Length: 145
Image (cartoon, rainbow, N blue to C red):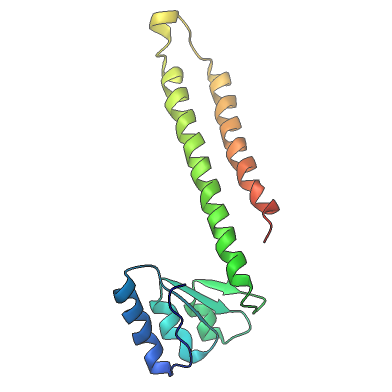
């Protein structure tokens, strides 16, 4: 965090978010729990609403911290980073699999080597690709937050 703005009137919160966005040209997060925080939560790139706050704030936020503890913000950021890392891994492996498997299934190896892939083998390989993506995603269950 480069800057923290606190003890601001409700009408100044929304304009403060806009000023910080323009000044730093980066992602701006806002944490709030009340009705007066709703416009600023909506304007921020990441609106973090406290689950113990008002319904308006909860509806305006992108993320809702159910426990109401500010310490959970760090855990939330770490979990989102892990999620994005696993998502990229899944895309990498699924793309790599398809780049290799689709031409083989189309018969690219038939002319030079006389090898044809049975539709049964291709369907099993595709199912295993899906299983590996789901299995990799399940690693999120073990992320320490």
